[in-house]
Image (tube, rainbow, N blue to C red; front, side, top):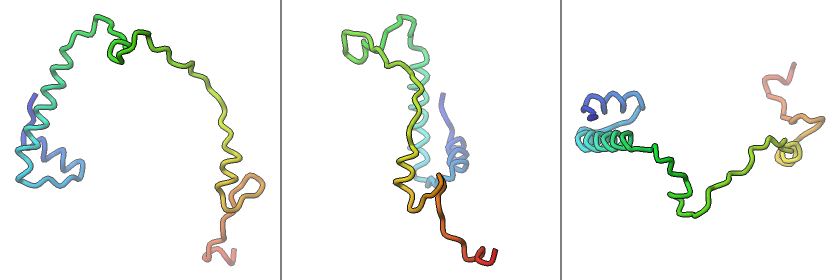
Length: 101
């Protein structure tokens, strides 16, 4: 798949990127090359079931840790972080506009 100059200009406009005229041909070529490589990767046969241990260079399969939900005790950390804290609430200075309220 190749991209056109117009494609690059449209994506740059959507992403609010400034791409000068001198860079457009090179950028168009590079993105086309990247998309061609991704297309080649899509054709790769992955049915062999190669495990991560093969590409990690280890002899043993990876055993990920168990996914456990554990409560995080952030209460103490939040209290330590806050400049003023009382009754489980942050204390903030009154706004000048709210002085009369």
